Length: 269
Image 1 (cartoon, rainbow, N blue to C red):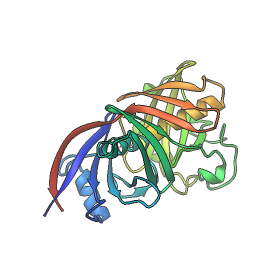
Image 2 (image 1 turned 90 degrees about the horizontal axis):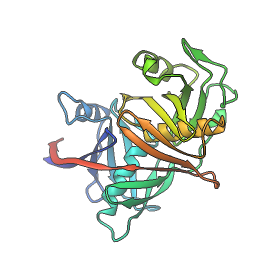
Image 3 (image 1 turned 135 degrees about the horizontal axis):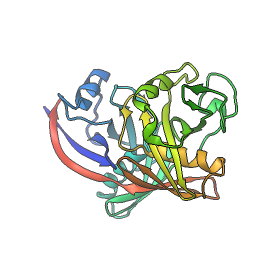
Image 4 (image 1 turned 90 degrees about the vertical axis):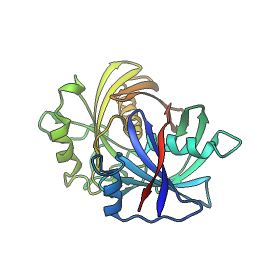
């Protein structure tokens, strides 16, 4: 039997979404990898299953392209918010994830998401052992002294003179799987171009290089602000386009950007 899906993206970070709020759906890791395969499946960076929630409008189950389940996806949260808002009379949407409940507001083809309070303690990233997360005393070849931030999933951010000069395709998987990160880690390289602007590339754990990463943009902004490199509201420019990130006075991080529907279809499972 064919199962309907929606293909979406946020700045080129693309997703396959199944709505299982009325009809439950369980997929194996092998099925997820097959659906995400860009040659033989639908193709995407992440796969989401929308499920009922007792505490929010929807529960968002998140899988990376390698079949592993993760706790958060910022670009994906905007997409799920848009789908939910289309069936409601209001643009205000609450989304439960494994990392907790987040709130969003949908306005046309975009959404603003309250990504919550960043976690900055080494045990919350988590790291294998204790250290300062503002400027970590570690390095991999030309990348060193990163900041670590957990925005629902773990990130390390390296500040570099030129993001395009970093061989992230090679160093990303090395850092992602380093024993320092017991849950693996997302790897960002950030370049400060102005007090209100950051260029960013991200290697996502379980997905590889992506056009955009919402939690990565939040992590890079928080790391830059902690180092007093930028103002508290910035534009983060990713290969797929810009996101607006604000670290508010109440310690919550707001992310604003597009959420686009590419097409709909059905796939035999």
